[in-house]
Figure 1 (spheres, rainbow, N blue to C red):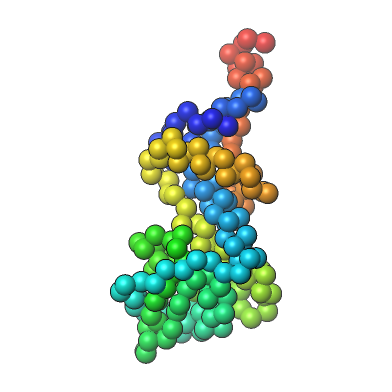
Figure 2 (tube, rainbow, N blue to C red):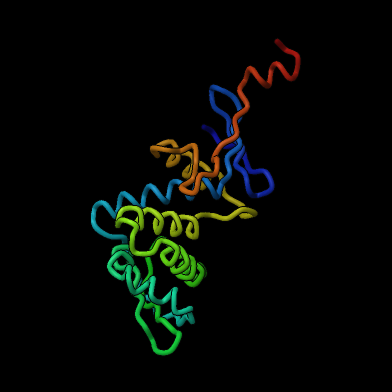
Length: 189
């Protein structure tokens, strides 16, 4: 697919031999990152970056317990989370794919996801859920302008993914208008 531009800084408009494609940039990038995270996890662990100033978060007892129960998985994701007294935890390291502004929201979302999973869920299912949450928080957002190079990168990486038609949460990535549909609507055929 060749990107032509964006619609409302949320959708990539692209063309290929079959017609026109409208791609949700967040969902597409989320799918790409999800596949990359799983690939790196299968090889060992994600790259981590230490924070110059650790982030202190107040969490509910259930959220703290969920993070504690899944400490080994969090380490595989490149996160260092430890109790810091009272209702607080300290986040000292995060996966390098996360932008610093997303760290707090990601940890809170992971804590909620893990609390919802409980202990009966297998490790693989837990890792997939964590990978989906991390990919969602690291992906480009809607209403964010992209350069043509960034659009090309997302489309090329999306082409390489195994399940490029949906994000890890099940949302569709692409809306297609075939050449035939376009020609029919313009009464050319």
